[in-house]
Structure formats: C-alpha cells, structure tokens
Length: 220
Image (cartoon, rainbow, N blue to C red):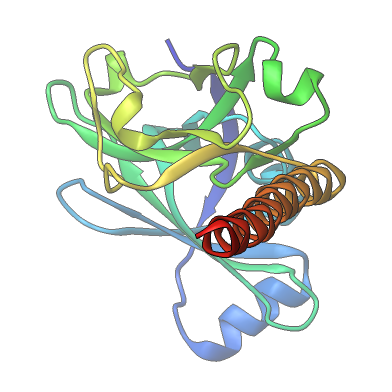
C-alpha cells in the first residue's frame, strides 16, 4: 500500500488575482481539489510540499482543510518559469472502487552483465504512468536489469505489474545498456583488420594464378 503524507490547508474566501498574489507573497500555494461533489479552493504553505514534490517516491495525500479531511493524490503542479517556485497545485479526491492514474517511480534492481563489462546503463524513463485502484497502486515499479548485456534494453512491453495497467506506449525503452565508445572503436578496428586480411588474401591468389597461366601457354 502506498504511503501517505498529511498536509494542512486553509480555505480561500477570495479567489481574485490580488488575493492569489498575496498568498504567494506570504509563502503559500493556491490549490484546488477536484473529483468530489464540488471544487474546493484552499491554500497550503509552500514548505509542506517538500516531502511530496521533492522526492523520488509517490504518495497519497491526506488533506486536512480546517478540520475537513480528504484523501487525495497530487494531480498537477505548476512552477514559476524563472525561479521554479510552486505557484499552483491541483489535487484529485480518491473514491473507493474508482481507478486513478499516477506517475510511479521506477526502481532498478540487480547487476547488469553489460555494465560489469564496461557498458553504460542509461535509464530513459524515471516513472511509468499506472492506472489502478487506490488500494492496488504501488509505491514503485521494480525492474530487474540482471539480464541486460551490451546493446540490450527493456521496453514498457517487457514490464508487468499486478492489479494495474501501464499506460505508456509499449515500444518505449525504459533502460538501455550501451557499448562504451572505446569498445566500439576496438570492434571497428578488428572488423577493418579482418576485411584487410581478406583483401590481401584475394590479391595474393589472383597474383599467383597469372604466372601459372602464362607458364602453361609457354609450354604449349
């Protein structure tokens, strides 16, 4: 079961632009809850977002807005384009028996043979979008990389989870092991060397055939 974080919020009586600016200047974030009978507008001190946003883990949120409690997930968050300050957040209220969608972090486990032999592990996706009932939503998706050798990868299609569905396109690569440039250069040199040897052998054969043919004609 996914862990929960408790956040305390305060109701907003005024929704005007001047009130929004005042909230932000005082270190608060304007927020909205969707998914219930009506939208609820409130604010939260920006410091309380630290454990929810600046972490690699996914969480449910227990919102306490002046005594009214709501079980939610963070649906969307907006940052200031210049200083990255949080300027708005949307929460989705959870309901028993209703599936939700969340970006769930990926945890890699195991040792890749390709990496142990000098390859480079490239994680192309840090999260997967999962659809599941709240009770079945995982904290993270575990991916075993112990079978990944040089130039091998794991795609979304290779990953399965219990009691849920991955919504990302099946053909997307999640993690790849690439051959280092040094090893690529060595392989290319070996191939060029082999091709050069084959060419030299061919020239020697052709050169050897000419005198023989000439000798036979002279004998005649």
